[in-house]
Length: 138
Image (tube, rainbow, N blue to C red; front, side, top):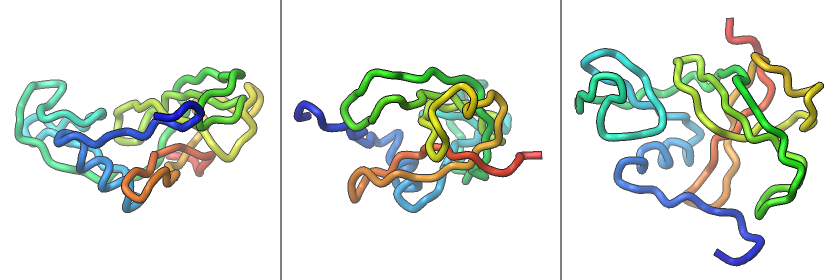
């Protein structure tokens, strides 16, 4: 990686489905066929019961802002300030992401605010799920 370049994730056999879905504009989660647990990040077994019988589930893309920190220092691929956030998906799992489409200030980033997934294309193979203000999830 050259200095100043943004890190590009490398799909693995366990995460290939996730990146393929993101490339198509879909947020794919895994759901256990034994206990029904929906989870993230991708792994070859259920995080709750350890079962290996899992299926893919397309998420609604709706979430709420659970937590965040505003970074005021530039980083490769990011203009400061930018929010490093944890969102809680409507399906239950939480994921780390960035918030876009809103000023990166505490006044604009309100905990529990409704969010909607959108995708930033980094390469022909990798699109990142990020979240923007959206409609209420209720």
